[in-house]
Amino acid sequence: MSTRAYLTLEDVVAHYRGQVSEETLRNRRAMRIGPSFIEIGKAVLYPVSELDRWDKSNLVVCRPSRSLSLAEHAPAG
Image (cartoon, rainbow, N blue to C red; front, side, top):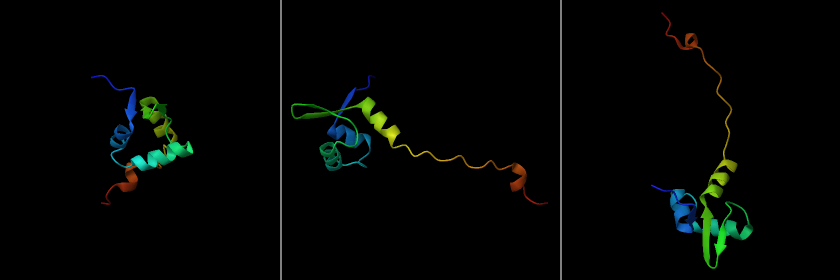
């Protein structure tokens, strides 16, 4: 199964499971923020590589939790 290099607006909404709307993507395109895109005539295409880059730019990095020893949680007895 080959992966597609470009996604349509509808495909991008489906890719993000509806958590980003078409309207949000349109607004972000107008403001030149968000994922990079290609316009060919009236067609708007999003390179999958740019969506991956955008995902990484929005990545929230958490600090590692402190390591707990098993002795701290062992039942008393």
